[in-house]
Image (tube, rainbow, N blue to C red; front, side, top):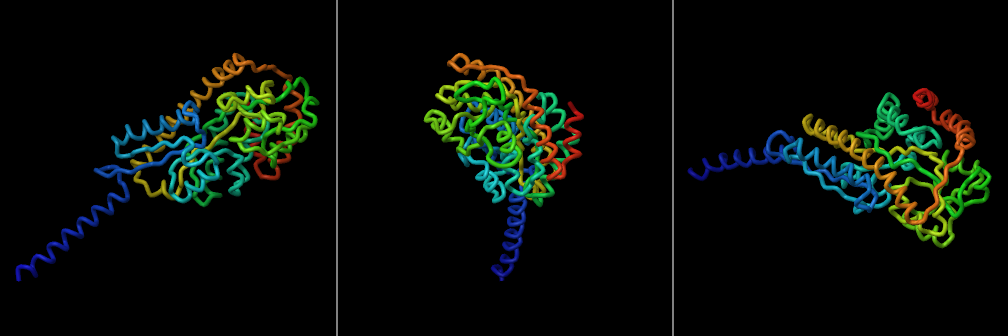
Length: 340
């Protein structure tokens, strides 16, 4: 009889334990529960602005949650290709990732390519006004809706202002005639470089140093912190830098929307606060590094020259108009122009 009476009591205790365990799995973040967030970018340099941004995300998320949110930051260790990171985000192997507009178009969200238009922005102030305003909000909504909530944008980062660098300086547009340039090989970016007379060429980022050194490509384009960290300016085909300033780049800080929706309100609030802090930290690091790495390139023998950008801007405008019409973002393009 005693055993018979004890069995229901034990079952009740087990039931309570299971229910408590279920609460832990959800990670309420308001009791003793804890969640772990895997945050990743594709750059391997520890001095990269991406790393500064995600470390700030980690700092704020862990502090604001009193340690109930743990953030593990990966610098290139989960993948050096954006496609790898996005796949991990969808599968749940990563929780926060960085991607570019160029990659996002491959997921079927054509509208994001608006932010990759050559000469769309005239300064960082102009860029910030756009991405932190109405246009940025609308783009975030498009990304979320068109991805069926697979992607939720929680911040706009930048990868700097991109310039040409190659085996000779550019003094006028005709200097690009017949020059191979490592850049996007499709879309409005490729169309633009073709219009200048250059030949867009596909080379993996990790192979670009060797390609420049061995004359596989004549030139490339990127922002100072990125190509100088990779020593591209020391190669035979990378030492001449012309400040074309053709792209004030945009990068998307993403989470999985479906997973985000399952967090508690407190966890959501903390993650968004950490994202906001990461945006400020990443931009500040990037802006400071641009001057630092420009000087480093000059000190190490690179030659930097300025150019009249107006002919390049004039070439870009009709390409912007055409692409915006095809993507159905003419209203957003006009708002960007009006914000100058």
